[in-house]
Image 1 (cartoon, helix red, strand yellow):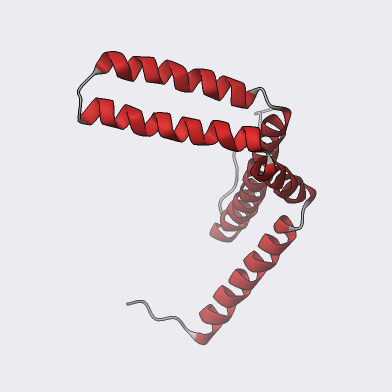
Image 2: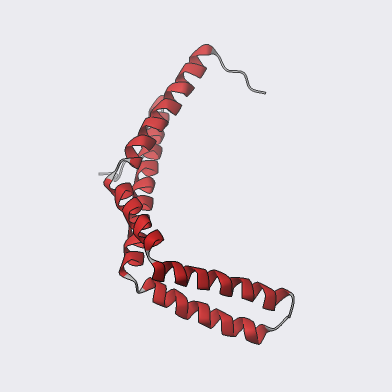
Length: 138
């Protein structure tokens, strides 16, 4: 088990506190607000919920035909039915909006991770005394 000095614990707690603050800021962002709105619309949309239920039922059928009945022809038939249901689901505007909001949140999170990674990498290089190679030898 690792032991930490008081200074290390304070620094670690500060980092964790800042991470919680950042998480709170992200959860209040426009991207998350849009996501929550789209999610609510999807949950209230009977057509969307019906398609999702049908897809889940077909997925269970596939498992049965793969494992119990060993019937690859039925598996292929059901997979094509699922694809048709998925296409119909994807054609509903609120579903497209929901997927877009998911992508927006993922992009925001990746951006945050990249900024943190780059900032930490810059600090480590400076503290280690390493010098980046010049862009050109001119």
